[in-house]
Length: 326
Image (cartoon, rainbow, N blue to C red):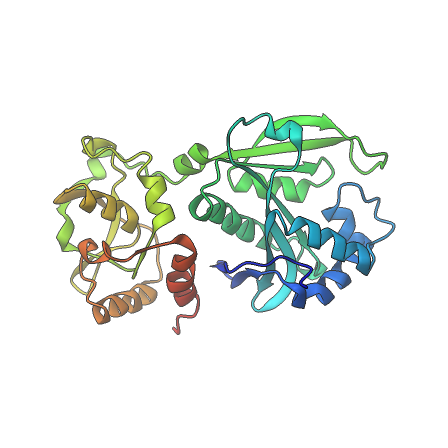
């Protein structure tokens, strides 16, 4: 009988480093034993630790066997090297749950066991991946996380991903490393707002939807679901314009594919666009266009039949982009 309850979701991301969050399972127990036996690792991962001792194998089995029943647990890989684990866990603190009646509230917990990866900015990236998964993949209402006031690095990571401090609570631990427990929250609406695109009116251009060249092969149903929460088919002025560049005589969408699908499904023939002035790696986009040509995707309309569950989008698109040979 398995100790860790596993799942079938894998997440792909990273900027200057490839990050894969793969399902945590019993095969990873030797790594968990090693990391959790290190008092310094446990000191930062467990608010009740004073940094003098780690956990034994029996305790590790009990922790992960229990937590995984109500959490989606991942092994963190950086450039194919296992470095730690991260959980999206159902809120298990009653006083926090009471703050959000009738809402789906989750918490993110993380431990990086390979200390040479501390302070490298990797945490900001994989926490961002977990936040995306929570709202796009799990349709969570609120993420509520907490760290000790001594753990400045973790607090900054949450803030960089849009979390705001909501309260401070005097530590109930008899340990001396923290005086307060800082609570951070990010709601679905705040997450949506952070991903909206604001462009001055004079930068917007109306353009035929069918003349836009996509640069991806499928659409996340989770992303589309959240866009539909703000999209108003009767108000084109409130529509977030689509960024484009000229490449090989094609007006290429560099982003905004899900918005384009929402516009198409609403019956729009024209959408607002703007010229993307960001410096982008256009060789990668040229490969994207080649993939689209091979699958006869030449306008957003061709993507309408390629709306897939978010976990499949991760596998079918984000994984493919990570493995792109340049």
